Image (cartoon, rainbow, N blue to C red; front, top):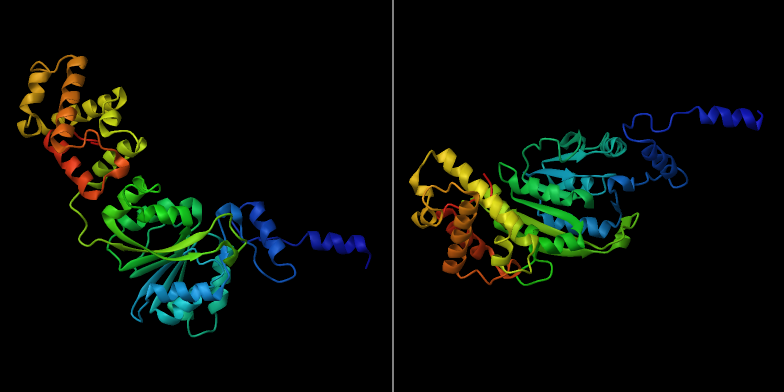
Length: 344
């Protein structure tokens, strides 16, 4: 057959026809199926396949999977960790966004004793409702790490633990302590709701393709019962304070923009309470001239309350980078008692 005809026939064959993704994903699949018959990672989705069996075994071991457990695996990829999880668990629910990986994972368990123990969900982990699970094990794409962590923190019913493979810097932030360079809003919010342990470091060469940064495995256990705190309100305060974590709390809170926000929240809460005097401090009313009619008077009233709370708690000259959970809880409680709210 002439070469021109052979080329024409080949070019008419579909490439990744079942994939709902872009042509880029199709190209990576074509490239990956050549030579060594490996599916190439789609790096635009943050895919980096864990290829070292020793690391896979270590992660599964540290997950402490029981024979009665249902495991949620987010991002199973080609199934390198799915198979050993199936050998230990009662059931594995694999949640995968890439349809190529869905087909690969299913293919790996076909006609095996593990086939009946695997449920594959094709969907976006951030948008899909998660089923019940005892343990979550995940090699998370770095760009959605924060979203997945906070979805885990808010997931109910609670689960026993989550063992996550994360970018090293992000992982270290989860467990950073006051005064450390990595200590940030993520650290405080995560530690409010969970206990975080650093389990092991994973070098970049253990992945295909290698990422640009090192990775770490962390174990996260939700606090049960959770602390009696309105998390939205809590995060509103933490976000403000860590926006400039090296400044004193007084410097952060006394800016015009923050004063305006707190005054608007205060008026909204007062309106919702329909005049409930429990939310209004008598000293605040005096500072505003009784009726709080002028915007300048209202701002002065809020400023006076903030000054008083910071002075009474002793946090005026403190910086967010050095405060621990108990400090922030004390501060939030004092602000609430004075009628100051960070969200409504």
